[in-house]
Image (cartoon, rainbow, N blue to C red; front, side, top):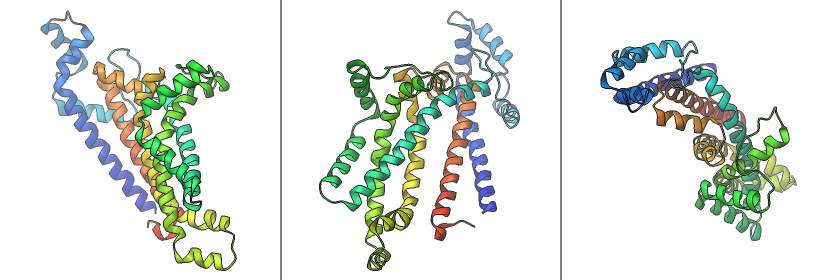
Length: 313
């Protein structure tokens, strides 16, 4: 198990190097535009060349990348070209906003998706049709449209929740919960739809297997069979879907944060991309790759814990 984790982490680090290198090579084609953006529209070609030299953008691209990489492994991601803010602290400050939305949405997705999936698999008729209808709605309707509908209903018509803005948890827990409720619901809709479909299909397959019939003939209660055996065996594919939903929610936070004016990771990445702020773009890219690697590794370990036959050596 330890060797497997080390191999996965090593492969993840190699992937991070390749992705950040490709990203830097793509950014290198716009060094003149970035220097001009910093100086303004009135900058002369000579002044742009001077700015590039000041930022070190006139050096060979590979030398620049290796210099960035040598600092990144020590936790130094440089300073923003436009605000002179340290990239590491800037990402950390905005990451909490995004995670507060995404993690709550992921938890709600797990609860709703598993509950509806199990009910749909075990209770035919009206319950199954309602669960499948809710799943179909989440698949077909985009998150953005759901978000707009929730703002119209909960904020503009009923005045229950704020339409935009964010309140830190430490400042006021009640206002924090109110500020993230609509974004969380918008992210949960599609995630719960995918998870419901996966859990329903996996549970139906498990309930048709011989061991379930054997347990029922021995007089074991259906609830115990569902929770202790069938659901545990069906949890592997569901965990995979949940990990994909986490990555998708993290990416979808860009749109949600723009709609609700949340000062999070997604909107920060979007603004940095528009400006061509290379240190921020590189720091965000590295973090995103490592996040995906760690999430996939945790899912593999969880699958091994749930299913001894799938344990990795």
